Length: 232
View 1 (tube, rainbow, N blue to C red):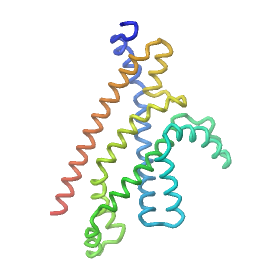
View 2 (tube, one colour; view 1 turned 180 degrees about the horizontal axis):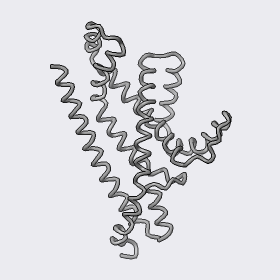
View 3 (cartoon, rainbow, N blue to C red; view 1 turned 180 degrees about the vertical axis):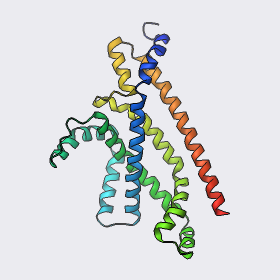
View 4 (cartoon, rainbow, N blue to C red; view 1 turned 60 degrees about the vertical axis):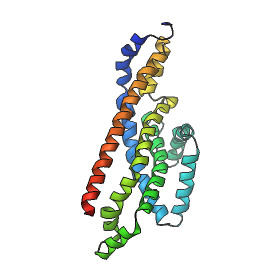
């Protein structure tokens, strides 16, 4: 049985695999930033029903939510350099991680836009009217009243999507990215011991998921406390 699985190798491979964790975390951080910004813009476009942009946003969200992310990854990896070449930009020598971040940022923005749109619409209209009655502008009302409450509503779904993003980064190896899973596959090719590497990777992802869950729970509780104080 030890021929197929050697527990000692799990601990031996662990430092090598862990050394690639910054690559995985970089994807999560930058894709989240891009996804939140673009997702917020798409949500506001759809809520305000901006002509042309609204129709484009609907098609974009439908495509990103309706196709496998691995398909999107290959489209971006092979299609983005061709598209940019039309504008005189050579992307053929770009690092693989850039294409991964772009893909996951676009994918996440589609899901975030729906989460944010539902959360913003879900805020009681009386809150907006109260803000306007005290002389707030649309932006002030959104920033001080609507956005914090919408964020609290969106937090559970937001956290699920970010943890899902962390897990989906494992597909980056399909275009040559050497992250946590990419290193596992490289070790498997060299040593013919694949299972041990995946066990080590599973431990890393489980620990990260637990930490993210705790972070989001803490953030949600702090936000809830802050909103409670404001409402008094």
